[in-house]
Picture (tube, rainbow, N blue to C red):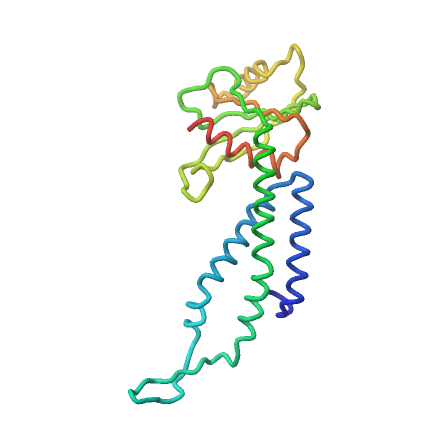
Length: 226
């Protein structure tokens, strides 16, 4: 609702925002577009559900006493409802479109997640909350190596936990230099993790790593070590 308080203008703002979101989705870039969209939708729904309480919270002053029976008559310090009406008109336009866009993004997330393969490399330790993630696309020869660590529980997050990722390196996998060999090499070079939990995330197509693969890997890793 910045810049110009006019519902017709704001509808163009909404459509421009959704066009940007859909462009990200078309390019399989789900983060941060999808979580941001969810937050906008939830905030809009919360506002519409609580708009009566919001109106009642505005300052009022006594205009007089009516009766019988006697009762105090209040008048709002806000001269008219134009401001709130413009917001409500904009949200009535935006929320159904936000809801559909969220559904489209979540379906794309589910389709991509279902096509990925997450498997352990070697045996998992008894405490698998820290280790390495190998991201590999079958159409590419390089494998991206990330260090991961699961944080404490947070009931506000999908799966209840979040995974912190840190890029380590990219390596060329071959018939000789297998994922198991890559893991052993990491253990030799990073002795602070003598027995790391190690997973391979394989995609059949190249996908954006930061915007898609790592956010989905967060969810899959939480499920894998639960």
